[in-house]
Amino acid sequence: MIQKLIAGIERTGAPVVVGLDPMLSYIPEHIKKKAYEEYGETLKGAGEAIWQYNKGIIDAVYDLVPAVKPQIAMYEQFGIEGLIAFEKTVRYSKEKGLVVIGDVKRGDIGSTSQAYATGHLGKVQVGSREYTGFDEDFATVNPYLGSDGIQPFIDVCKKEKKGIFVLVKTSNKSSGEFQDRVVEGRPLYELVGEQVAKWGESCMGEDYSYVGAVVGATYPEMGRVLRRIMPKSYILVPGYGAQGGKGEDLVPFFNEDGLGAIVNSSRGIIAAYQQEKYARFGSMNYADASRAAVLDMKEDIARALSGRR
Image: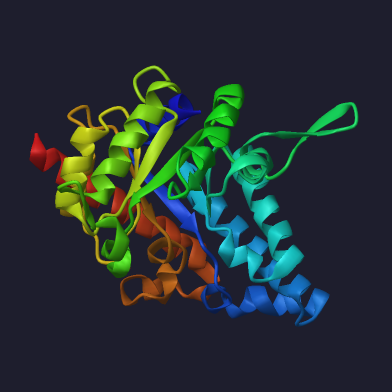
């Protein structure tokens, strides 16, 4: 799957992943109104509104980007109906040829970790048959339970040719409370990065590993160090746009070949119509605003990377 992701980035010229992190406040009133008329102001109505909203955005951007990243908590808050919307979103994205990164941040040990890996990336045995659960192509995982929590995911990745992105240095302001702590003279995130590189050695594609890392755009200098530590790991970079990251901040995350990183933007794209810059589109054309935001992001990153050469 890492090869499909890289091929998509090269085809589109956009190392961009659209974060499908819907909130009801992002969804235009005409979509909510229709869903509520059909299912009432219920969890099912909310799930339908989310699904229709996502579908509009996917239809508008699938030819511009290689991947989408639905954040499962935004769906779980609506219970089973939200998870149905999550599943529909994953399957429709794959039908449109997109790589799906399940932002699930799972982390546990033993049979629990195995069950998470099976549910999101693998196949579950039911009698004489096998079924996929959510069937994402990649999943984000938390490494702080150690190798016991990661190995089941790596085992499934090897079997299914899928991948993971391990949390190394996250984009939130308080990440340093633990991730920056000095251990044996070095920040903890560097030690985690070294472990990611080791895990990745056992799970390689052609040039890059199926084991990637999450490193926030808000910490470019740390990204520069981690890029050296993990030369064969793809870096998923959150924090662009709404969280303050800019194109110029992204350069350290990429290798000299112009590959090695994919940059996420969530509300900066999916709620673009609510921004002054894209207000001209209006809520009825929210998906067109999202497309315009993707094009602007693609141009910003390309400009920054071309300046390095």
